[in-house]
Every structure is written in C-alpha cells, then in structure tokens.
Image 1 (cartoon, helix red, strand yellow):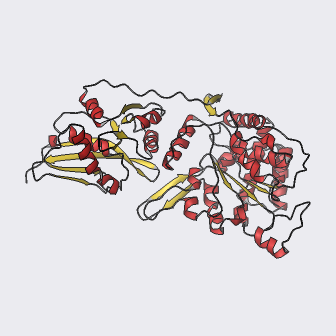
Image 2: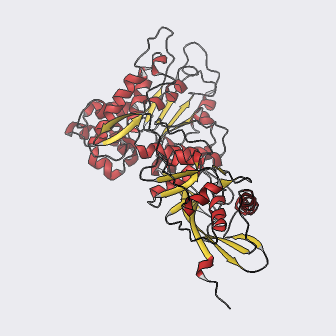
Image 3: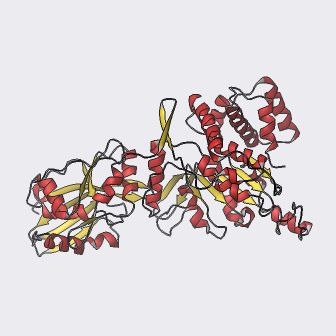
Length: 509
C-alpha cells in the first residue's frame, strides 16, 4: 500500500473541554486524490460534524475554492469526546491553506464560522483558554474579536483577533500585519498584602447598615467572612437572617488576579459572559433544586453544579431544613474535603469546592417558636422532626451557629459594610503575613497545628471543654480555626482564652 506523503497532512492546535478542564486537540487533515468527500473523525459530537457544511459555505463565500479531493479531518486524541463549535476556524484554515506552507507554530486556534465566513464567539471559550493557561500550554491564540478581549486579560498570553475567515488566512499567509489585542485595564481597586496584589469592588448594592440590631448575628457574619467559616442563622421570619447573609458577599476578602479569572471562567462554563468583577459570588439555589443541579450531573458527561460554581465564593441555602435530606448529607464531603468527585460512565471529574457555606432556617415549621408577638402553632413532635432534618454529622461541619431573636423596631443601625470590610481586610492581612495560603476556615489539620497556636490558659480551657462536652476531633479543630479568626480580628498574634470562649459561644448546643 502506498504511504500518504507527509506533506499532504497538515496540523493545527485547538482544544475541547473535558468536564471543566481543557484538553489540547490536534486537528490534522489529509488530502488524497479520490472521489471528493469530506469527513471528520475522532469522537466528534454533532455540532462538530455539522462544521462540514459551515466550513464549505464559508470557504466558497469567502472566495476560496473547495478542493475536489477526499478530505479527512482527524481530531486527536481520538478517545476524548469533543464538543463545541470552536473548531470550525482551524478546520477551515487547514483546507484553505492546503497548498501553502503555512506555519501554525504554537498557535491555538478557536472560532465558530458563519456561512458567510464571519468568525463568531463560541460558548465557554474563555474557560478553555484559562484552563490551558493554568496548565502552562497557552502562549499565542487566534480567535474572534469578542473572545480576544476576554482572553487578553490572561497574563503572558498573546491574542490576535480576527473578524473573518479571509483575515485568518491572510494572517497565516503573512500578507497582512496583525498586532496582539491589548488587555483591558482592570477597573477594580487593589491593595497589597505580603507582596501580593489583591482586588476588590468599591460599590455596595446592599449595605449592612440597613440591618437594625442583631449585633451577635452581624458579629458572626464578620467572623465567617474573615475566615471563610461555615455559618447557620436561625430565627423567626423577618428577623434579618437572609438580609445578613446576602450582604456578606460585599465584605468578603479581596481576590487575587487568578481568583478573578477563575470566577470569570466559571461564568463562562455556565454560559454567561465573563464579568471580571473582583467580587466573590453568592450562589443562592432554591430548596426545590435537584441533587444534580447542586452537585453536578449529566447522563454521560458531568456538568458543574452549584457547589463547583460557588468555589471561592458563598453558597447560600435559605430555608435549610426544606432541602432534601439526601442533598444535606451529600454536602458533608465538599464541606470537609473542599473537593467533589463526579463519576459518570465516560468521565470522572474533580471540582474544587472551597466555598463559604451559609444557611438560614426557622426554629420550627411555623417559624414562631421564638417570636415575642406570635404564638407557635407547632407540637413538640413537629418541632423535633423539623430540627432533626439536620443530622449531627452535618452540623459538625458548621463553624458558627446563631439563634437570632426579633429586633426592636427602634433598634439602631450598626456597622456599615465599609467598616466591616476594613476589619475583614485586616484579618485577611494577618493570615497572609503569617504565611497562610488558605483562609483560616479552610486550613488542613497540619496547618491548623502550625498556625492556630493557643496560649497555655486557652489550651487548658479547650482540653476541659473537649472532655466535658465530648467534642469530636473535627469540632476541636474548628474551634481552633474560629478562635484564630477572632484573634486576627483583635490583632492578636496568639489565641487566648477570650477568643476561644467567643468561638465556643457560637457552637450549636
């Protein structure tokens, strides 16, 4: 059998998503003299196979002749399922430059083609580019103009924007001079801690000054935001539980540039246009949400759920006991391990879940158990059943629990969001200058031993409390981490008895 000459095979680089991780795809095409045909192989989905018609129309309407040959396009690796329309442009370039000695070099090529040859943005393209950059594979990119502005924000990446297939062909034929897209200036405010720049947004859509009274609950929210500690607020309807939690996103610690880009990548994976805002997300699923929507699902391939999308942000469950028990119990692993493994027939994907879990709940089914003005209509059995929906292993993963009472109508406003955020920033500064790469609430056991040091009196108090209240090893570690955050808010290098006692006051009784 006659071997196909190497010069008849051309290659160009692109990529496809495997879960939330981008995998490089080498697109290669062979051109042989036989009955004219055009086929795409390599586990391509229907959207990629439909590229045959888009590519053929785009080439003809752009003034290029479609070669009367047998064209076979292979997407390698062939064992990876590939989806999306971002491979239209590289396939068209291989065919258009079939007779040219074009050097595609280390370029990654992305773009969906219109029938007239226009290059359009494809879904999740920023997420693909960010994942490749994280792996150290992305250096130079050619793509549509809209995506180029987004991808240019990724450091150490050259991005060339093109509008039509003709421009892309001219680019690789070097008939026209193109210049890299300039990165848009990042508009957020920045602050430097431990020689690292962090970014934050200045404006507040909602403010803590709007919350009247509830000093203890606001203190718990301050501690939770400073150390990324899990929080549950319980109280009668209208006492301000949801108000407080919804305002926590505005006072969260500042973000590194990588965290801003990671959040933009998550928005891209969700089908949204990346906002590049230096404000941590607050995800707020309804209690009727399915298990798949919370943790991720899909019959063949895994799709991100709320736990993964809330990474480095806040995951808020309102009306906590009304969530299905299966969801609450399944939350135990991502809350403890900060990762989530989704296994499907064709894929196994690990998502990072370093979010702050916040929840609000009523003390009983009717909500009036602690009300000063309304009688409770629930029997003791109904109250017991309602509260038992939260298991002890689940509650053991909660750092702060506050039982809220109704505020008086004449209660004064407390600290504003700006004042609370400045205190969060100082606590965050202490964590970073101590050499921590993680928030206090997300420290490992070894890091807890290293960074959460107690003085002699505090150590004795903790030992007595652990013995008297039969605290688990997990509960003891969480007490130390919360105490460390309280000490940071007090600008104390060590944890003393007062810090430990305040942390203990927030435990579920």
